[in-house]
Length: 271
Image (cartoon, rainbow, N blue to C red):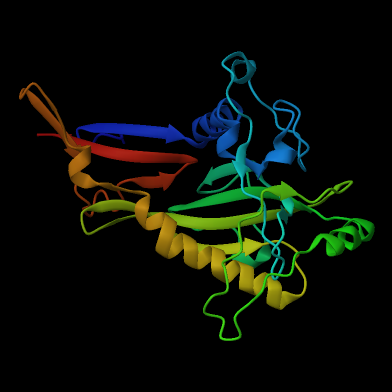
């Protein structure tokens, strides 16, 4: 049966194309995926991070940054100028459309991948530059006691840290994250909805569950609602001669867009 039996036009985007675009963006715009404090980001093209950054030669040619610089991490209760250095990197991101052939889902997400679903795999590496005890012992002697009003009313707010505490190495870790999502049409929008999320092998279980809860809630309430497209924005007119719009969902087209055969498919009509 021709793919346009129930619509005038048909468009398809294969998962390989999506993953190629993602890899291209990660090498062309590495600063979108790699974050650290200034000391770890220097020198510019050989940063001291947890994972080596693979980047296109054009990044250096056009003097673009590899890393987005973050402020130093404050130390609770400490009022001096020093803070902790740290880094955060998204080193891997992979998309897999139903039926799923690129990502092996963990058992917690009930594989195999359900119909009309998208699987994601991400790898995050990070670390904190933790100072040795002899360094912190020296800093204790440099602390300045700030006179404080007993009521606390005149207590000054601590200044943000401006210097990194010296240390010999960054304590690194990497985490793998898996998620399953579906593409839905709701209230005039095409949007993504999170089905499940799993962080792999974090102990104790309470820590893993707490992190998964925070990430899932952030995705559902903060990030994914913003990653949506109004159906009206997908209506294209060509000099008032022809108009192209998404085909309505019917018995013949139960999903639009549709996720199947390792592709994201869209059905369109001429109006």
